[in-house]
Image 1 (cartoon, one colour):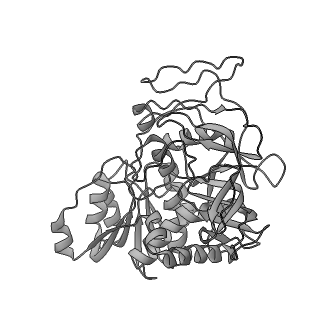
Image 2 (spheres, helix red, strand yellow):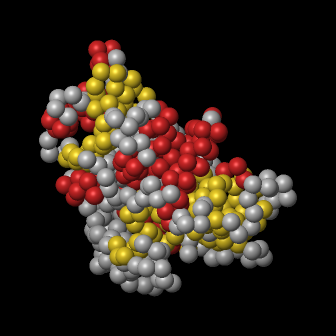
Image 3 (spheres, one colour):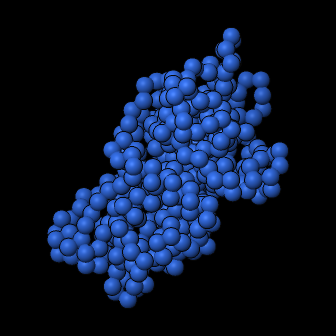
Length: 415
């Protein structure tokens, strides 16, 4: 699961699997991954709190399941409705949150006029982050007035520029960090929120960079000040940001990584993506396993995204003057920090909140984006895409993340 600072993830749930198939570049789907289009059996079991979803009138295929955990708690029934186009204006399709904790609508919206400093981008892919889901439930720290289109990051092509825009031009491929409104065929952003994609970087890979890799870069480089000889422990290691941390720590910072995850398949995944060791914290003590792997020494840096007892185990696994960076709370429990542990080992505890840097320290934020694009261009990092959904399947994509099926990044395709 993708983790964003301050996000609390739902509990586990079971539902029909969404298989992925590999494809080359063709008209049927994205270059490397695409969801199999075979529909699941109907009806699909959903959370007991909601009861079975009724079939839609005029058809035999209904919603592909509803999330449990946080989704069930707010009564989120996952199905997508398509509203008719508005007449009299050139428009574009967008996912629209019209009511909190309700399914998103895919609606045709009129294209607004550009301001002099703005850029209209034809979106190729939008990254799905857990913060998007929380925002649509009214549970995220940043609130949006209804109706709104979620989506914090995207890749696309510049379609039109305002009269004062000089940084980009029509036809260029770009990534963008918007905070909202990217889950649409078009997105209007300030020119400062765009970075050009190098020719040899795919639009799919580029869409993964802003949030997952941006958070990882800030956590490792700016907050933890990771050094090449050090050992990093990362929890929730199989999520998009966890895998980005492994990728950057190993390939760019030349550090050693111990990755922790909640199942054996996820542990295998982190090993395949560069971790030196994997720890299944659902079966054994995280602290004991880390101690065994490090000869009792511990780790220099912990990037923690689960919270609760896992946070405390990671904190206790630090060496003298170690650093722990809080990235999120996937387990649903925000821990209290035992201050005596900070004192006894002279350790530092800190947080990383990706979106705030764009407002408070834009030069650093922009440097992160530029560095990540360069790493990708040079082949130093390799973003992992776990699943691709079409815009019409946006609620299914939300469900996929809520049910903790996702490994790597989930992206929404506008093609």
